[in-house]
Length: 308
Ligand SMILES: NC(=O)c1ccc[n+]([C@@H]2O[C@H](COP(=O)([O-])OP(=O)(O)OC[C@H]3O[C@@H](n4cnc5c(N)ncnc54)[C@H](OP(=O)(O)O)[C@@H]3O)[C@@H](O)[C@H]2O)c1
Image (cartoon, rainbow, N blue to C red; front, top):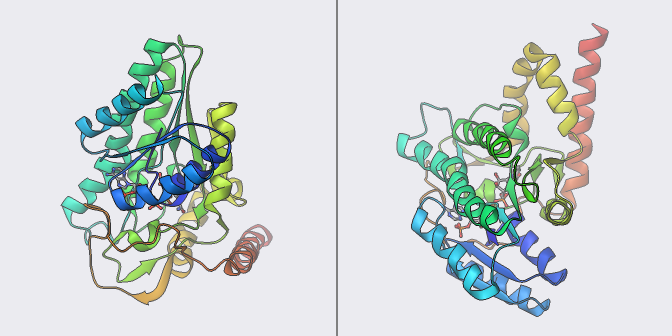
């Protein structure tokens, strides 16, 4: 089961599971995008069911679970990568947009957890994998609803793990990438005046999908994907004043593009019709260059800090 399968990491995970011979139920709000990815999974040899569902609507999530049970007899692994983002200062983001990001990324995840864990506990096994984020352990400006949701998600998962310690074969996993090259940045609601972009270093959706597949086979509580995550986490914890001084300028330089954009709600309330789910935030040649530049900048800043 994958909720959020129509794009980005969820889409890549669907293909990875399909190639591994798994049976799939794919869910998201956009039926057209789901059908396209389902066709690719079928071509890879998988049996696939498609269900349109909105994680902010409990009854549609239950419907997804029922479809999986009816089609395949149960759910072994549920991956939730459904998420939306909103850029802008907290006071510039309309309250209903802020609320909908939290409703999708945090409360939607809770709805998925409720549907999955009830079934996993009854059948005695199951792996629930959430798309977390580096922004669940560090903070950046201009993305407050997303950051608050990802911190909340990490806390929720920890609490759920504690409550399910008695179910030895029920696993709750958090796969937390740094920046990943997916459409989420372009599709985000935007009240920052400039389109968002993944700050370097940028991983591929396929790399995160591989980590998700591995987690499904050999569950681990927390998996991080991203070459700079550990350094950034360390900087956040060990040198908070330096982190706070740098994160704003770095975000404006690396996390927002130069391309101007009028305020808009992006895909927060409904999927964008014309989005190509394969579209990337960066051309592939840009990734190694961006990663190198990001590392160099970080190394210089840290070296300055420790040699001054
Ligand atoms: N890209 C990154 O840099 C990055 C970094 C760290 C963590 N992550 C996390 O990785 C996960 C996947 O992100 P992504 O980058 O792959 O984003 P994406 O390409 O935009 O995919 C997000 C998916 O969520 C679905 N979705 C959105 N709202 C939904 C709703 N209300 N109900 C059901 N499905 C919904 C979207 O499909 P529809 O629009 O068709 O519903 C889409 O399939 C998220 O949890 C994200 O926070 C991403």
